[in-house]
Length: 246
Figure 1: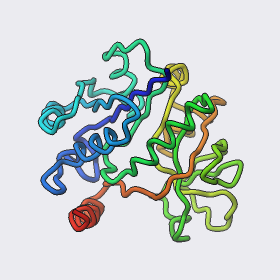
Figure 2: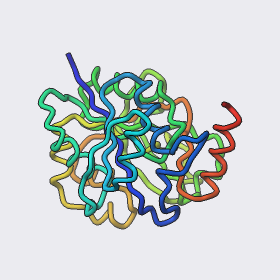
Figure 3: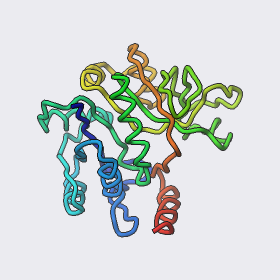
């Protein structure tokens, strides 16, 4: 039977919003909302990978599992690989890298990506949503993915490129990239042993390291774009939405 492990990298030192994993929504931290949603997906064990003891204690207090990692990692993927090695699980086939700052991630999207990975035995998979506001196309804070085919609920096409650039003049197969990644174990091992590419560093997009080294990334259609918490404005907006729904 195929086994998936969900790992959630989390750290306190975000430049634009330091300490954001422990900010509260409905009296529960953002990081705890994320792991609880991951657990609801029920695709595998969920572990938070963090360099910070406060985050670790918060996760445990809220019923989750966490593991301490180095504070010298350049990317979240490097952090989850260390966590995977420390956990020493021999029977894992796929690892899902879930972002620790998206407390309203759709559990069905997590399930869907995992199913696509298993059914296609893909190297790397990720999610993208339809762009409903064309202003997103020229917003550098919005990461766009260009796929080889039009995304539907039933297909899992390859990504051709990821970019922050203005794509308002090009409307073919462009979607809002959602930063959740699924890796076959062998692909994750290969990825973390590759040097950061020039393209990756210039664009601050680690997935470009994979494309630059001819690794394939498949893309599944998400039902919606989760709100990532990068700034205080993001936090206040999602706090209002989630507290209203409750």
